[in-house]
Image 1 (tube, rainbow, N blue to C red):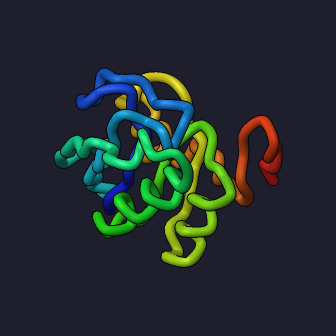
Image 2 (cartoon, one colour):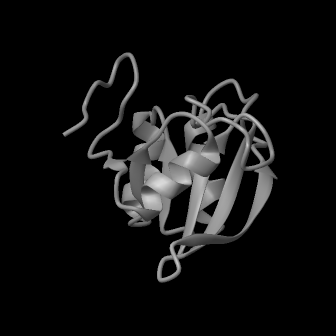
Image 3 (tube, one colour):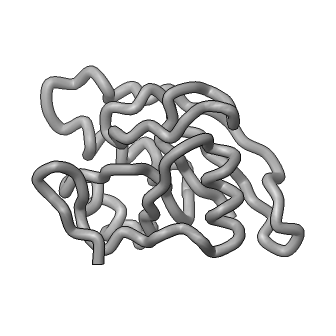
Amino acid sequence: MKIAISSTGNNLESDVDARFGRCNYFLIVEIDKKKKEIKNFKAIENTGKDQMGGAGITAGQIVANEKVNAIITTNLGPRAFSVFEQFKIKAYQGQGKIKDVVQDFIEGKSKELKDATGPQHVGLK
């Protein structure tokens, strides 16, 4: 299983970036769910972060192109959320160190996002 996480840096010690569309990196993490561990990961620079508009759509496409099954972030705007709905990629909320957030995901402790979030989009269901 592959997940993408909005990240402040390019390694597992980095923090989850609260801003999905404007984060610096996406960490693409491959998990072995049977062994309940991280198999490997790679960092991808978010090339859409400095766009005037549409950063969420661009970020969503970058992540969808990696063929991930799920994403983890703190806040997810409506455009990015829509991209993930189209590709049937589930979104989860997470905060803190990426290695800890991934472990929570593996253990089934992550909260699934059912709608866009953030200051204008408080919509956890």
